[in-house]
Image 1 (cartoon, rainbow, N blue to C red):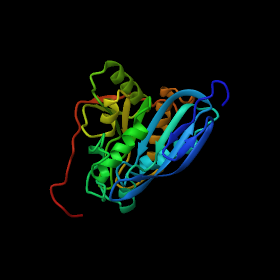
Image 2: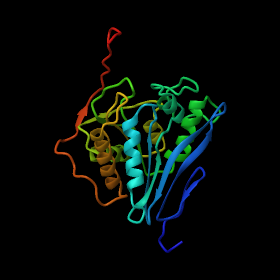
Image 3: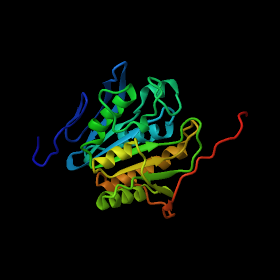
Image 4: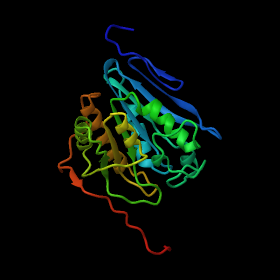
Length: 263
């Protein structure tokens, strides 16, 4: 290892030396089943913070998966300062079956099971693995989402209200760097960002797109926001320009549901 070279980064069976990128499938034992998570680890040539990111927490959130993949495989390890651990599809069983909201292995919503339980149901075990192997140890955590197969939503970022002034301020700074028009602040029990907050890690949830589609403009909106966040986190020097609008804080979210079935 060269002087001042960062140490290797290991996630499961994947190890990225300084200045390299590794990709592969990591098998996770969930008790009654084993799933394989597609993961990209990019370890920069220069020391710096570690950013962890997940996409595909829900099965049909294709915009988030495409965006995270595009950024992770497009980063240049030679110029990166720090590292990125990217889980491209965090719920592969739901992805394969196109199951809305829940993991078909046990019918549970992965993003309500964090920080998980190593001896629990398959979804709880998956949440525990992601918490201990991906979220823990990072300086910043980002969870890329979009609306699931049945959802149309307005693009927004969300952060926790942890009560830790420094963590909350950093989370808000990173969310505003993402550049989406709306920001929600509040507790979200059982979610990835709550797990990160419990560990004292600034965290941002970002949602763009939905309805089982992944049009290029939605993917690019997510990509641009995530790259701006990586710049704000200190990993890269260049990112797309900030949008012209100011981020607007929303006091609550609203779910609008159809009162009747049909076409």
